[in-house]
Image 1 (tube, rainbow, N blue to C red):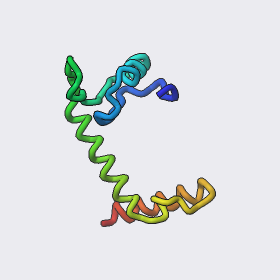
Image 2: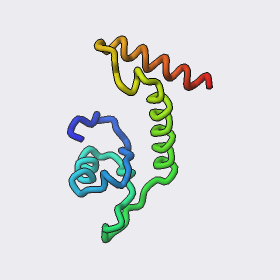
Image 3: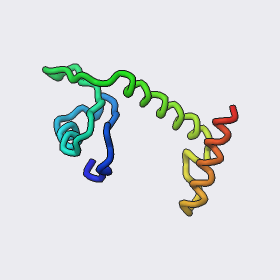
Image 4: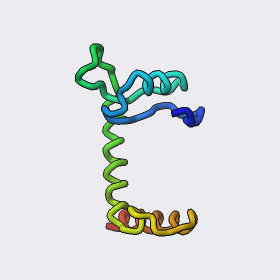
Amino acid sequence: MEALPPDVKAVVGDKGYDTNAVVECIEEHEAEVVIPSKKNRTTERVIDKNLYKDRNKVERFFLKIKQNRAVATRYDKKAACYLAVVQLACIMCWLK
């Protein structure tokens, strides 16, 4: 969280990231917290539902490209080669 760029407007996460330390760190960076509250919270946080739904789309996309074995296991040693494999997996996902 300390490495957040200064231009971040919102941080989206699941309930596992609903801790006081994470929320305070995000608020220190003056970003919107889009993390649903856990059941044991006394005060429930209001979140942007549309922004939270987009998180699911991103997760599903990563699951699709990780179906490519080379992306999931990262066989390539060089970053440029791995980037090429990820780009190829994205193209294959887009074409389906």
